[in-house]
Length: 326
Ligand SMILES: Nc1nc2c(ncn2[C@@H]2O[C@H](COP(=O)(O)OP(=O)(O)O)[C@@H](O)[C@H]2O)c(=O)[nH]1
Ligand SMILES: [Mg+2]
Figure 1 (tube, rainbow, N blue to C red):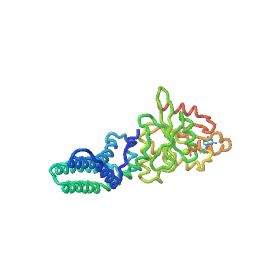
Figure 2: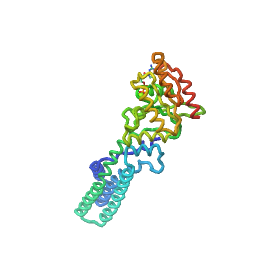
Figure 3: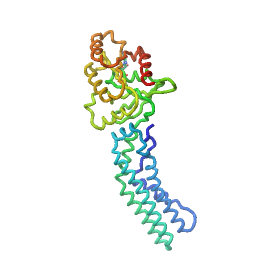
Figure 4: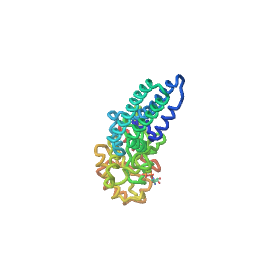
């Protein structure tokens, strides 16, 4: 599961100051001095706690699954992320230390003026520590927005990854082979997100079905480095690839172009079993020459014939997928 699903977004520095100072205004019982000590304690504990709750909401990087690490690399700078979290820990510890110093001075203070001076000093020093980590806080605020795009993908079960050019029928096939209704999950570099479903593969095991609109649907050579990183993170998932092919070209892409993308995908995922799913069989009668041409070009790939529209060939496809995954 997504190790970043529970991370927290730090508030802006002004907001942290505001929350803390207000927390410190709450009065408590006791002598004026005791009240003052309690206020300082509450104020500075509030800042430290906000910072530490952000740090603790992050997973331990050494225990993150490779898929998620690769995905992380595509959207944020991991070292900068670690550094920023380190800066927040530092600030939290420093504020605690200042709190102890001020409180011990307060214990020795006698007149109200001196206590007021110490309180102002506490506020000023806390403010100055927080200002020093402003760039790191802002980095984490932005990173949070990016990290929210990391989907909940299971890394412990096999995946059936759908690829192929737009309108070839990837989503239709995903719906057909999934048990239940697939869900849309966000993914870096694609506005459509992933379509995530699952299928029963027997013996009480499930596989995950992943439709990847906008990721594996055009030549990879046109991708920038970070996009590629997000795409190749999918290599870390165990499982197989289905490449959906539309020999009727009604998808809007010529056979040659689809073959080029197929080559790309099969090279990128060379470690995985790939099946070409020849779709739109219900229309083939009108496109006999095209179908012949496609079949000739695809002869070195394992291929299966289906119609996502009518459901023809779907049982065979599902059986083949099951036998490959079990
Ligand atoms: N005739 C026919 N149309 C299909 C078939 N599969 C998908 N389509 C249609 O092709 C279009 C694109 O399908 P979609 O699954 O969204 O393709 P994707 O872009 O690859 O996900 C839709 O209008 C589908 O209804 C099929 O087997 N036969
Ligand atoms: Mg689609």
